[in-house]
Length: 233
Image (cartoon, rainbow, N blue to C red; front, top):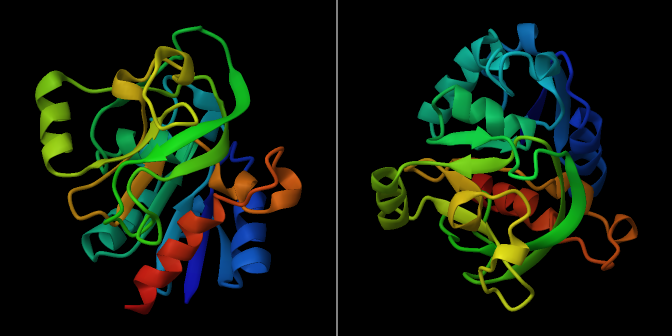
């Protein structure tokens, strides 16, 4: 298995993702400059966190027109795993690979903290080793993570099992206090219809080793191990 981590101008979580994939999960992983990502020699692709193009105009919108995204879209159509983390999620939305929009946090401030997620769908490439309702601990670090979609789209996403992660309390309840950024229906991560393209605002690569977690957990690792499990099938 060979995984690509795409580096855009302004990416700053790319090396974190490479470290986890190579040294924690044990996958052959290549860091690829966005203009050079054009061949098909990868089984999966990760769009990392950061501030692509300095979040100019709107977070992720310029990177959505990068040469790399043509190949990412092809991989998505081929059913290969595509994961967007934080800024990568914003890029997937701006590329129309995922539905909705990511608005400024309701606090109008950058938020960086550990929080609780509830797993709402386990059919995806990145959640197949999890249980529905499972509680995960991961950190967020973003200014524009407030997920929004209209009522009709949200109903369709719910019916199609496209809402993957929600911010919750430790008991799995969706409360205003557990929602850090104002995301509609506490949504923290979603997927495409097929379940092979997933985007989430929390950072699993920062939660894949117990030494980095205040809770001494490695819940983020499950996302990458689920990807490996899906690729083996």
